[in-house]
Length: 188
Image (tube, rainbow, N blue to C red; front, side, top):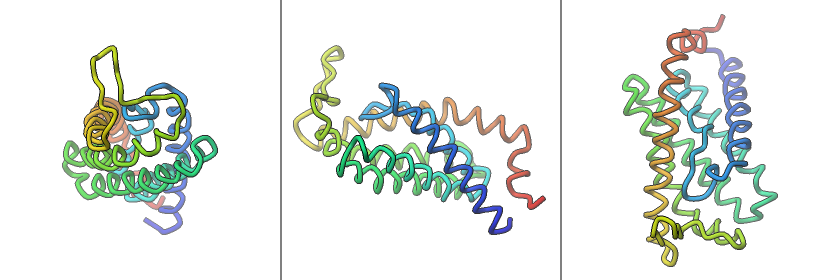
């Protein structure tokens, strides 16, 4: 694949991912320790082209940077570390693309381990919201960072798995059936 084509593909992937993410965060399950971001289904594109690795990273960076206006300086944590989680997850996905189930574990694991580490600090800046206390379910993980982190690992991990495997896997199968992988790799 030519360098120009690689950059163009990465740019398109970044734009689409950022747009879907900005829409997803407008829903109650688009942010916080319990997340179901539909945009995460797009991480499967890293099984089809190496351009998805920088594209998904840039899309995450752009979407998270866009939110700085509402989150303030604490949003920089998401810009830096959320983007890092996406980069690592996408690189894993490309590396293990021949083994789809293993490949798709990359975004799930990276986000489940990295995002909950900074969420308690970031969400503390959101006035009046306690994301770690779910009284209806009898769950109270607020108080200590480790309790909030472990709660986040489970909830972010489950949310990622639902989206990546539940939506992303059928998306990937459909793209493969349509021959998108071959068209992404060709220079024609």
